[in-house]
Length: 105
Image (cartoon, rainbow, N blue to C red):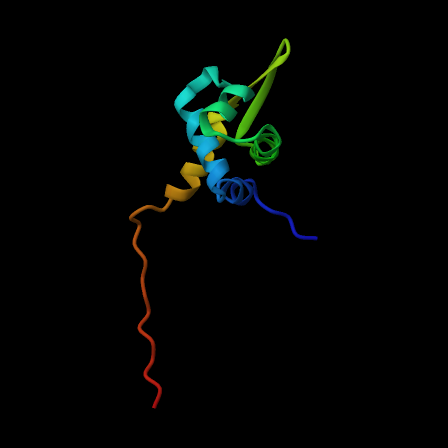
């Protein structure tokens, strides 16, 4: 059985244009988040399509959902986002030694 790391799941979820747009909108919204209906209106996504993409972002651990009355608010899990960014930048500028290929004779 293959297990996928949380970072790989997060990156895979962000690898779709609609989900990336949703995530970026939620980053801009900050800790207050956005209602599902507002996200759909802002991005022009059908409710069923939006629900699918939000579910993927929630399953990837990037988005948290809070029900307030009849509304569902979505917000970025900023600590999870920072873990992904830390992974991506953890060895930034540390250098890579490239071994020259041996010439085939």
